[in-house]
Image 1 (cartoon, helix red, strand yellow):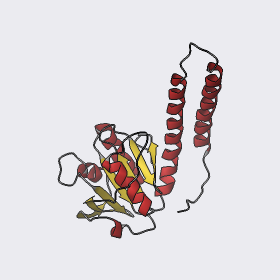
Image 2: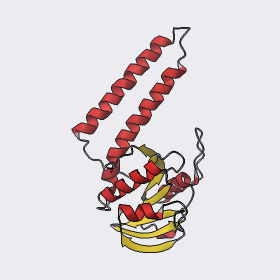
Image 3: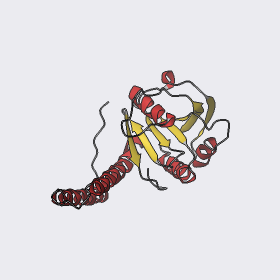
Image 4: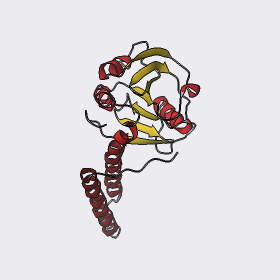
Amino acid sequence: MERQPFQLDDTIKNNVRTYLQQISTEASNLIKHLDTSDHCILCDFEEMRKLFQDVQATAASYYLRHYLSPYTFEYAALSLAIHNLSEKRHGALIVIEREQNVDPLIQKGMPIQAPVSATLVETLFYPGTPLHDGAVLIRNNQLISAANVLPLSSIISTTKKLGTRHRAAIGMSEKSDALILVVSEETGKISFALDGSLYPIHSSKNMI
């Protein structure tokens, strides 16, 4: 599925440029440290890994709004909801339908048929409530249903074990052009899945 290109604004360009300069500096330092017998280069690799994660999350947070805005006007409500869920470490799984109808791909849960609001999304994912498991489906500006079951990806991560929510998000994105938001209940970290890949994003009330 081809993604439509769009122009990066000056703020995101400068942020990414700063990260890349830091990464370049760390790489130069690492090269120098190769000939230093008393220096452990593992610390250098760890610092570079963190910088790469930060620059990816910065770019992904910017792109996310552009991926969503043609399909729902409620990205501000979604941004606030997943920020609050992240702070409380309440797990969440939110499918935003785009061009393709996703009904044939999911096991339908409970119909909701209500306008999207941050309060409603947060309430549905409150731990212990009947509908907190499974995924919420959003179509245009409507919250269609909750507690939906998504297809799981068969992907095997070599770096860390993927939880059920993340495998479901990737699985759904492998089979459709939907964008799926995920909040980890273990770490509170936020990601989105698109075209079979998972992207971390920064948590803020205006991330989308």
